[in-house]
Image (cartoon, rainbow, N blue to C red):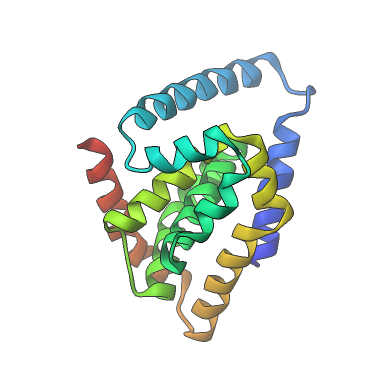
Length: 182
């Protein structure tokens, strides 16, 4: 399931890059990209993870070192943000449907929701899209695929339903929204 979800997101991202779309769709996507890019730039200015981003910006080979400094829960929330970001570019509707699920999955796996440290990692994951080499490392080494896959297997083992996980995640999404509004 997790591989299917991940590959679906990647395929959708690749299809979104194709030129055989109508002008209206292209214009809407361009508008969305401009808004998203503008929001990201604005958020980076006040991001908790700006030191992490600065280190990666100075040398993208630093990504793996900085990522490895994160604890397992932080790594999960980084990957949740990264995956949702990739999905939102390709299929915004799918991404918005998955937000609660991904956030709930982190709580189920690590018994830890959004706090100062996990939000910092989440923010880092949201903003990593500025760095192609880091993205390639994440995809080639299947970093997030493996982390989210393990969390998904754990939820299956615990026999948790998608609805239960999404309900747990809804609380975490509200925490993120509250932080972003600050």
